Amino acid sequence: MNLKKMIINSILLAIGAVLHQIAPPLILGMKPDLSLAMLFIILMFNKEYKTCLCAGIVAGILAAATTTFPGGQFANVIDKFVTINIMFVLIKPLRDRINNQITILLVTAVGTIISGSTFLMVVLLTVGLKTSFTALFLSVVLPAAVINTIAGAILFNIINVALKRGAIRQV
Image (cartoon, rainbow, N blue to C red):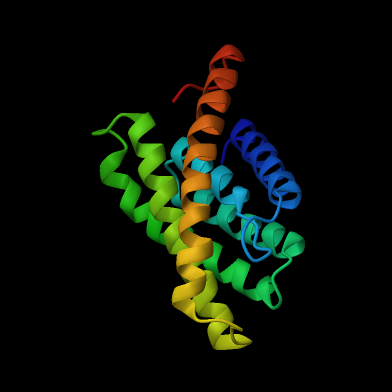
C-alpha cells in the first residue's frame, strides 16, 4: 500500500466522519450517513481490495463512534463491511466501461441502499426496531440515498480536481 494513498484515504475518512457528525437530522431524527459518500469515493480511487476493505472497516468504526441511532454501533461496523465487499464486486465491471460521473452516481445510490438495508436488518436482529423495516426504509434509507448520491457526486468532483491540481493522482 502506497503511503500517499494511505494519507489520502485517511483524510477522506476523517472528512467523512466530520460530515457524518455534523449532518443535521432529517426525518424522525435520522441523519444521512455522509461518511458513506466518502467511502465510495475511496472505492472509486482505489482498485486494491485490501485498501478498500480497510477503509470500510475504519469507516464503520468512525460511523459507530458518531452514530445517534440506539444500538447502531455494532450495526454500523457490520453494514460498512458488507457494503464495501458488495460494492467492490459491483464496481469492477463499471470502472473502465462507464464514465466516472455516472459510476459515482450509481455506486453511491446503490451502495447507500445496500448499507441502509444492512444497517436496519442488523438493528432489527440485534436490538429491534420501534417501527417497521419498510417504514424506515422508505422514510430514511431512500431519502439518504438521494442525499448521498448528490453529495457524493459533488464531493467526488471536488476531490478529483484537488488531486489533479496537487498532481498527486488522477482518476
